[in-house]
Image 1 (cartoon, helix red, strand yellow):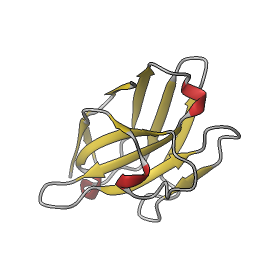
Image 2: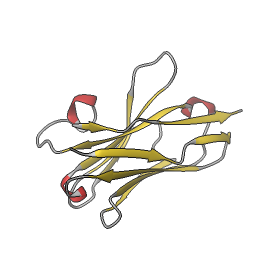
Image 3: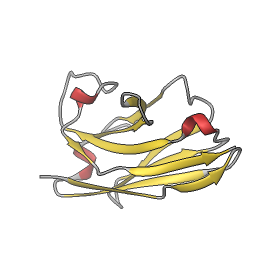
Image 4: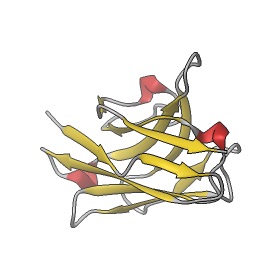
Length: 125
């Protein structure tokens, strides 16, 4: 069993930055591919970013490419989402997720085994 705890959310003005953290407990963190998703009010949860388990390859959704960066520190069992140039459309609950699966898509919910409780990000205009 893996527990994921997100932190770092909050209220920020448009153009500002936030760094989300997701701390994992349980099995070896480096065994997991990690992802970030978000869900805005009235919308479905959507993929934001993913980072692989070994070489740390990353993929960022087009909607946030150039503004968001995902990284991981296996020594600290933590994955990060650096968010810059935030705009009101980025307002959402942000979730981190962990996957032990091989061969599944990292871009959809079903590709992940464990989820955090989410952290709210609100961007004011």
